[in-house]
Length: 525
Image (cartoon, rainbow, N blue to C red):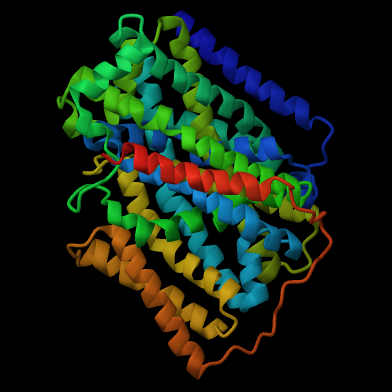
């Protein structure tokens, strides 16, 4: 245990020192410096930060747990992201940078009106507090409590051990976001991203080495031979993720998550120029194609080891696999990687929420003459309040029947699809008015809550996303017919960054689309 703790502290301290060293000369008391990293982020840093903002313990724990039970059909959540990132790099981010956006709600005010911006900003803040942040904290606590045996060490109950771990993670994550701003988040994410891939590949490698008795390929073959059905990526109609969802609501969700979701796209908004932003998004797309090696395949390996003995507690499969295959000396390093993954998503969401509240609500409605110093202070205060709310809410997500990752996606649909609908309508359909957008937002929100949580219908929730999107569009068209658009807004170049595109953007984008299709053909047996 001593070696585990030492390796954990060593890697955690290195990440903290590296982040401090990179920021030691930066001015963090200005709006761009704190919220957008001084518009200085490069493609590699953007990609590392985007990936770690996305990949956290809800993936390591939740997706491996789902893969253990359902197999490779859940790969759709990952590999289809590459297509959305291509669209984001080639269309969305050039327009965002051209307009000089700091937040996505800022665009909604330009295109529609101030009320639409405020409504979406409030929806986003609520969604982060009640969905993403608690699940990230709780899944991180499950892993770290398991590795360090917190409850046994302090002679407390398992539930109290989880509470204690949640509080510690929440406090440390808040420190990064509150005192360092976006740049501290981005740099710490980059190092943690490298650690996550190395740690995840180590778990995979040691497991296959053990199963294959020194032969990695032989180990993989044994896992496949034991349960070939687990490697099929084509989900049946009654599965946790039917194949048909790729053509209904899944791609709308992916477009929202990678092209319109503030905690993700804020990294690209902080790019030094368009070329670096495009590199960041496309490099992330490349990484997403490899991510299943660390968040899906280990879950299937867990089935080889444990059979169906943990089906009722699927979210425990990854911690059990770590304890089974990792040498003691590496357990602490991997715990630090898990901690980094939690902190990455947690502090990224805190920073983005602080940005949305400070610039979109406080400066617009509460103090229009607020200085940069005041905005940064309000941003820090917002982060503190949200962190406390998330810590309190975290244990409430325990016991999700289909696993924590599936719960997260179901909850995300409450806000993601209505917001995606009005942003896409704003970008592509000039006739949609502000009144139409607000109507679509509320109708979509009400429709999803009613059909998924209050009067559940026998339709997969991702299909409901697609139905909701079509309904939202119909409502917006109908309302806009009676209340026409009077805003003649057209994007103009604000000159905030150089807009020369990366010369290889189209080539890499095409390659990513082709590779995604190849994966489905290869594994779709």
